[in-house]
Length: 176
Image 1 (cartoon, rainbow, N blue to C red):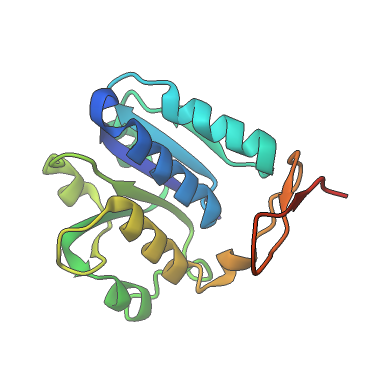
Image 2 (image 1 turned 90 degrees about the vertical axis):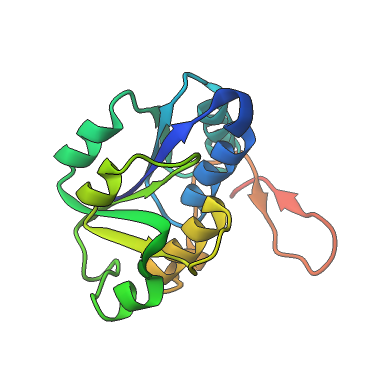
């Protein structure tokens, strides 16, 4: 089972930091890959590569020139996170959309107003509240519910540094 994230409509002049946060949240919350569609910008992909090198794991980021084709050809569920969708708790609990029940999942998050085709092509249009909020927050909440909290215990082997949990201060170490 694979979980990938599609960032729709990245705008290089406005979204570099937010798209980087989408990618880093996807990685931290258990996804395997992020696809960035929209304007050409290597910044978010370079950020992810740097984080993976320093903190480990197998996560990848890539530019996606044809998001429509990716969605149409996806062999699994496509979950579009939008404030206009069905409540996330209903989709996860009632429809059984969880990591233990599903095959491959592609989670689509937009930046600007998304095109109507994604609403039609998605297996699920899912709302994390029906109020305006950040796509980063929606992605984190959805993945947390999708993985039933197990993503909080993920390990990311192969990095140069490891964070040591601490009640105060920042502590890191080289992995053993």
